[in-house]
Length: 326
Image (tube, helix red, strand yellow):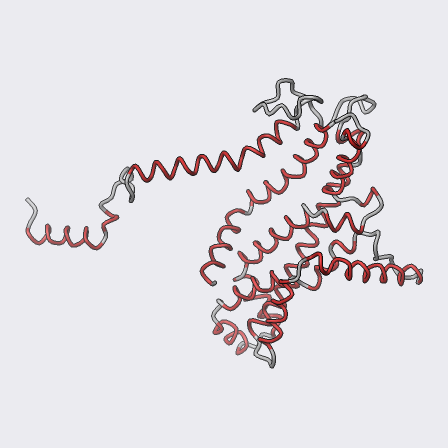
């Protein structure tokens, strides 16, 4: 038999920690609300996943069945490669176009551009967060104001700058050609950082206790040493979020390659898919081989899905931390 003291202690514990008495089958909300929430999540998941499923199914359908809206292909067709390179039917990686080379171009441009913009933005963000200097707030406000400019406003001036740089390097044979018609305009501007990423990383650096840096200064560390040993490791979630955002932006970028690239060998994957669409659609004189376009689009989407799947833990943590820091 329980003593009065034990009964009182049990009641006090239940009042202080009610979740300790809750069993796993006892949800915090009612079963009706929980069922409604699950139903809404299922419906939204289907709405979001259906386009991806439709794309995956269309990539394995033969010509003429691409847009039949069937959940699975009625006649499975391998549109990516084939045993015979001389096959009369288009095969994406054999007798259509250098798709594998286009994917490689997108890969190295995306990851190189994401790497340099993450590092350069982190340096500028750390300077705005740590140093106290005159006109700091004004300069940061001007930086934020550049985020209000649409890309279409700066597109022509930037193109003219790259065109001028291209003429300069062409006139001097000892310099590499880095103007229009090359892949340099697609990633070199990332060396100067991005206003959005600078703002995002600055907010994270402001949340790091300043005592860490003061202690490092007392130990004789310089500014770059503090940035490398303290700021970067503690900002790992935010850096990964920045990196993923920029990889995704570069990977699916069509406008900039369309402006600067002329040589088919330099195409990125999105520009290559547009080239194939113009080539195979009926309006462009093709026979409507849209299954090849669907296969190429699937190859374009799968790497980003894998990237988010691998880094989703850091991505969610970084978003959560940024949300708490405001």
